[in-house]
Length: 225
Ligand code: C5P
Image 1 (spheres, rainbow, N blue to C red):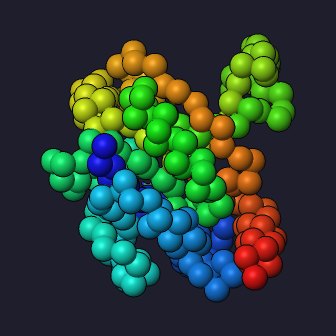
Image 2 (image 1 turned 120 degrees about the vertical axis):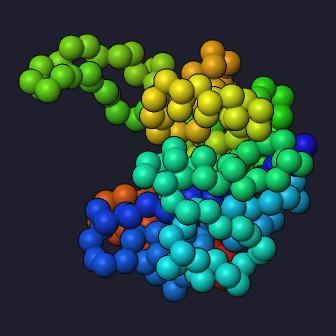
């Protein structure tokens, strides 16, 4: 099944500080968003790539494989939709990755693709290492969910193209904002499957994440030398 990659680099990413969005800051000499981008070039089942990025930063991706570019939307979901609209008719499976997760492992991506081929929708996930509580604005705890049933959801996520299209229609018609891609499938009542990710598939959001990313990137460079 031919897959299309929507590679998200359209956020303003200012929580790390500085004038440049975090996804374009250099991590071991290479823009953060380019780390995982290169990895996706290895998969021959990916037939098209759409990078969602502000035109001012498009050139960062120019020397990599052929890609088309979509404009970022207001929310992450709008950015994914902008990318989705650029995929050609031949694409049957959509893979979405956050460009701020540089350490995703190739074997996880491969397993994700095969799971989505069989089940229609899949996301990388790791079991929660900590306890989660639900509380409202007054900070009074309302309940504590059973941790053994909870997972932290990562990207990439893979969704059958038709399911994604139906999910977007339903979400926009009902003004539902989703923060990940398989949620579009959940809205349709279709089951989503989880594939084991890894704890180092970090989402780089805060200055602390950035420091950790530098350590992991240095370690990865040492191992590959
Ligand atoms: O904002 P958040 O941390 O959830 O961003 C996850 C990914 O989605 C990042 O790679 C970011 O660049 C991208 N994004 C986007 N368009 C938006 C918001 C986020 O492409 N409007």
